Image: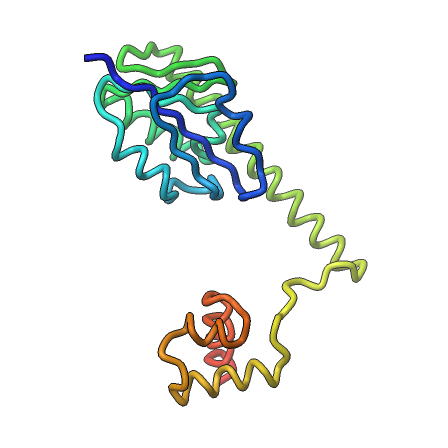
Length: 191
């Protein structure tokens, strides 16, 4: 039985274009994540891993779309190959199968290390840019949606049980559930 060709696409934001990653490549099914590649805890990535079967081939634009850390890249490729699933990286022009040679494994390690290094350099530059902007007074950090008195009102409403859930509380104040958690946690720290 011939396996399926499964495409995996990852972009960090909803605004990014997914079309170019597997452009011109025919696949039987495609899994698309709109998430950071910092780890493998991505919904469609996990769904893809559960979906693929022995004899299938996973096709990914590049190694950095599949995993950002060398550890994750090597672990996930190794697990797929052990299950009899091939994985092809278009940009690097390399395919890993159960018949991988020592040279293939070396290439995986080297290319993965470069992808991880690139990510770390980007994060370092980002932190440096934020530090410089803050020193020049151009970066103020996170903008709080609620004024201090509104934040206190939110905390009091939650304490009094006026809302059945943090989601409902967030909707009432026009903020996300995560923001509600931050505001409530901030009050715990000040106690």
